[in-house]
Image (cartoon, rainbow, N blue to C red):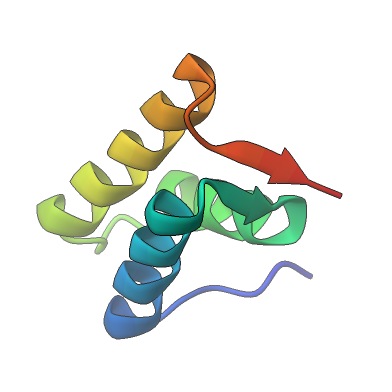
Amino acid sequence: MVSTFSGSALESTVQTALRQGSLRRRDHLALMSQMLSDPALSPTCRSQINRLLDYIQMGRVQLLD
């Protein structure tokens, strides 16, 4: 089972990944799962996750095994 984040933990995870330029695959999977399965996720949280995913696509954030 994939864990999910609370609002503050999600924001902290996103901010840390953006600052460090890296994200663990486990956290990436949890963020993706939460975004796809949680209809109650706020627009702000969705926006933060989308921003992080954009940075991963652009190569500004690397996924770590």
